[in-house]
Image (cartoon, rainbow, N blue to C red):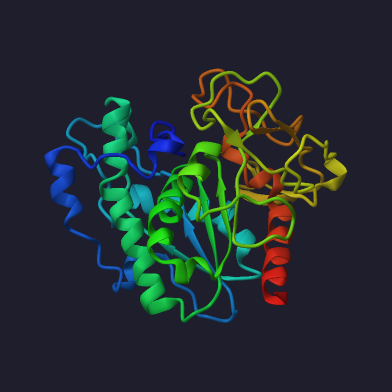
Length: 330
């Protein structure tokens, strides 16, 4: 389950005012202790000379009356499905990196769907961001050991990575110098966001480093999509170009698609083609490997939001390796 109601505008990411309700303000001051290993979904044995820091999408949704507005850090209803998100996204980086992944207190989707956009922005800027920034600060101080790293996120996880990039990396240019790439997928990076954060840059090709990689996947004729913002920009996950050059499914090294019959993910050859719609700033596909979101989805009827990573999984895996190699060569 993804951050359907949690998306805030790109220009607001670095400037959302911290005016969440009193309970959120109170909880914000109770920073999660990331020295406790149980507060990490993954804290692997270090076997590689590169790390990845993964922030998973929203997995907590409790519509019950009186349900918490934010998940407890130990909430099973968040932790259990977060494992599935790790499987279909973060495993693409395991061959080239030690993947670290913190748990963090997420907003209850049912609560966030009932409040205004401004209140949602403030909620984002309170407990979830506090935890993610605390987690990455602990990671750099105690776990990273000076290794270069990759940032990885999807949907709400990408919003959190946008905070990391805009705020934390601005304050810590010594870490930013070691960033190989940031995969901020399933949420729009916009021209305005980049203008507001001149210390950041967007990828231009397959192996540039220190860059942001971002796109949202749709079918043709998609309607309103809450993760596609004005001024959105994308890179093609097959040919790694910024223009509208078409990449056929033959260029797709394989998707990593969930098969309900076997209750597991499996490799699907040539899972999707890709072409950037420059006007919308999204990737368009004609894939039949999975069904689009459907008419009731806030991402639009022909969106493939849930499968932004899975449709291009093995190309992303190869691209991460290529960027690591390019960084080491430099």
